[in-house]
Image 1 (cartoon, helix red, strand yellow):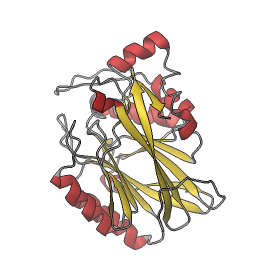
Image 2 (spheres, helix red, strand yellow; image 1 turned 30 degrees about the horizontal axis):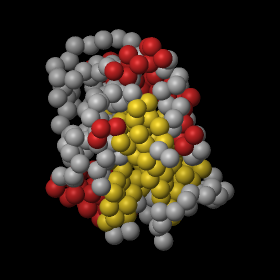
Image 3 (cartoon, one colour; image 1 turned 90 degrees about the vertical axis):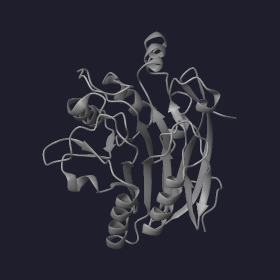
Length: 295
């Protein structure tokens, strides 16, 4: 039975924490260059480091090279940000979002390489179309989970379809993602599946009908939990049958000013060898770009 209780560590369990959007550009860059990058995530690293794995959505490319792209909001962060994430306890970074392509294919490839060099596993990225549909496996002892990372919102500068040898992110529809989840679940029926998805509408507290339909399809396909990001605000957490769904956990490290954008969540999930057994939502406040665990 899934509960929302405290997450006690046991030798045969795997605990993974999921956080929202992380930006190292714009206002965050200004704060970091003044006060130092290293302290940006001090307020949440106790939670990140106390889990077997920590996953966040990286909302900007990490590259020292600049490319001109045609879109409204264009981000770029220094590659040192990857080391900042790892020092805070982040083990996996989601790349399937609408800003990973902000510096083109060169920036996308640089981001992947920067994360790997820092000891972080990139997710939602591949250099072959078939590999995009494969989940990332996170293990501890005999327990493991499969994490699918995908983006379903429109990407302004999507200028190249995935092809062998070219870097790409998992940009897909909810139905296609559900089909990939179903195939994996059929072949690996005892492995719990988490979907970490970039979806919905920005700055809306309520979920869209499309999010609800996609969530239902993912649950039918075999997902054990769904954690969403992209709206920059917290959206409802619901149960679809026995499956917990966080439609949006909000930001994590970000510079947006509205109060709604500075309330966030970390989601801790605990698994045994074949199922999700426990979960916990941790409230976070963002103050001048710094995330802090609420008392």
